Length: 148
Image (cartoon, rainbow, N blue to C red; front, side, top):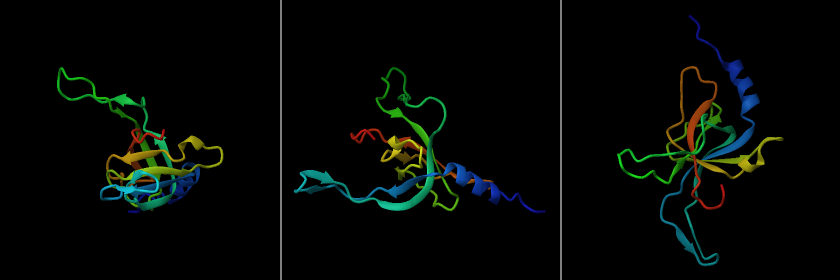
């Protein structure tokens, strides 16, 4: 019995949805080093694991929900959740938890405000037996102070 061949659908979806360029990187390890020239601390360089076609989309529902501490009579936490998802080709490596996802370039007519914005992978990238694109759950990084 032959299996379901999704290869034609994969090409169509990639050509219609994966129009932007995304980068998945593993954060650099080690302590920040003080740069005497700039007067700022610099973090170790991240390792790029994937850079290529992709898309970043809201994961549905309301963005920016407030997380709660799971105990009664305690205040709300001040950290918001901004659920997004990254879409990449099946040929892209499976993301690891805590990888940083950055939009590097957008297609003509795309939202240029996405360039440079960053998200953190919440879990390893999804995989399934009938996948057309790889889906990775993300949370937007909002605490870096540069508006990203």
